[in-house]
Image (cartoon, rainbow, N blue to C red; front, side):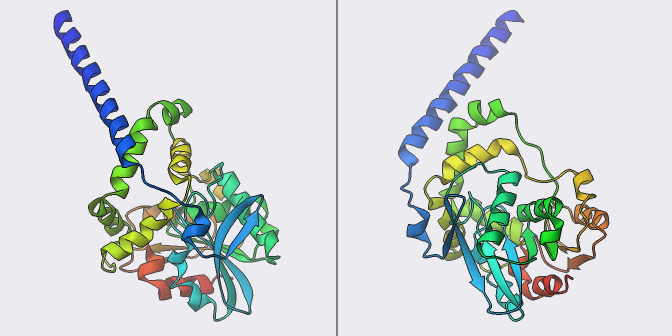
Length: 307
């Protein structure tokens, strides 16, 4: 038995070493050029606390609405919802780093993202805006509401329950993720097939043709300088969010909107959070996690109905 255990141990060590060496070799040959965000996105940008943040704007009159995206989402994802809201509101959508075209400057935590949204409010002198967050962005707007409810008109959570998820211990993010994180990251980005499957899951049962052009649009922000290191840094934090007890302390007009076929965040969790916020819960039939793209009219109507 001891002899067999020794042999198994030798095989496992050899296997780990082989995979590690292969990972390092792949990383050396798969490196791709990156560019500053300003070379990939024409703007506009605003400087917040020393770093450039990309954003978009629609509308000329009305009360302000600020849209905050989720994981791997640039502000273009609001491009079908925002024009509908802009009929009666001045609408902004901001890219939170390390996503979209904002400069990659950490930390990439809920507290830092909430700081950035509040800095955005101050930079544009927005008086009591309505904050709308999609996916992880829902946690960001909930945190701003928890910190400073009187500065807001209300919040809307879209396909996000604002609750935190588990993160790995700090040693894991340093010891195990690299070089394997880099290899996995590049394998995914270099494979239209993998990205297409991820997008199919996110869009849900109804989605546009997931051709190379659409995939390239989703992947373009990953070419911003510093993205790979930024995502590696963020990997150990888990899913940003609040404790349920913190959600229960928020006392501000709110609304929770979910695609009925959301496979990323359980609809039941959204319903539970809506109850804790004493907020209406709106379900959009036939929509998945990216309801803002597949059912923009319904999402815009739900946002516009927020008090």
